Length: 123
Length: 123
DNA sequence: CTGGATCCCTCGCGATACTG
DNA sequence: CAGTATCGCGAGGGATCCAG
Image (cartoon, rainbow over all chains, first blue to last red; front, side, top):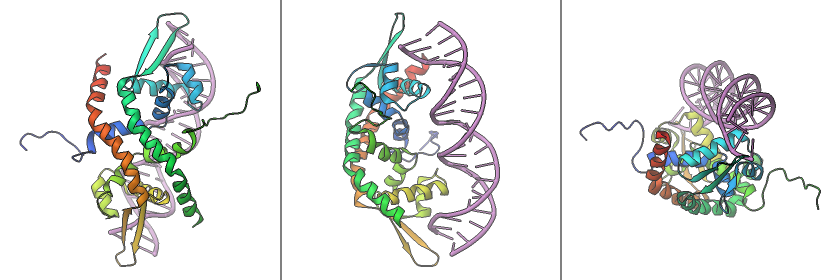
């Protein structure tokens, strides 16, 4: 290992690139936003209403992150009043596959988890 | 029924129970901790060293959460000096399956994501 | 060695007002 | 309609000390 590839802390294998991705999907809103876009392209205020408990600022930020990472595409129609639509890209759509697996697991096992939580509280 | 049914936030289906699960695994450390325990049971300070950039307090809290949710089992050996070992439960192990799928996706696509990020920065 | 308790500071995020 | 700018609070989490 001749020249120092400046690698401050990562472990080999999964350490490095995965963190960046999981940190992103781990935030409160990205998953919900992606799910909201699964079926059809939608507009800003439409997403705002459908997700419900998200603020404008967070939706805006989340959408920009997702766009930046290539999960969604943002299309501005030069009309008045302005219209902007968001839709999944192929990358975003492909991401939904493993994500659905995780959601499915959560749906199947949340009962066991809640039960475990109960037991813990009681003790 | 035109009157508004007060629907605060949940959607049917995935809305409710999944959030609780994903919020947990979404935090910075749970996934790393579970991965660290994948191969073998480990002790507290051992985890501390292997994960590296985690503080005692966060590791402690994460472990307690994971134990509370039934992902890991905590075993105290009544010795002196004290020894405590953590290991995955069956639930925890089953969780690793969909999670690995996600990690695999991340490994395959992080290049595309980084590329998309670059393009965005440049613009 | 395994953690709990405390201090303290950062900054994530909601609410609001404003712009194009 | 589709956002950005500003303010302000409160939780998250690191560092440190303490206990069993």
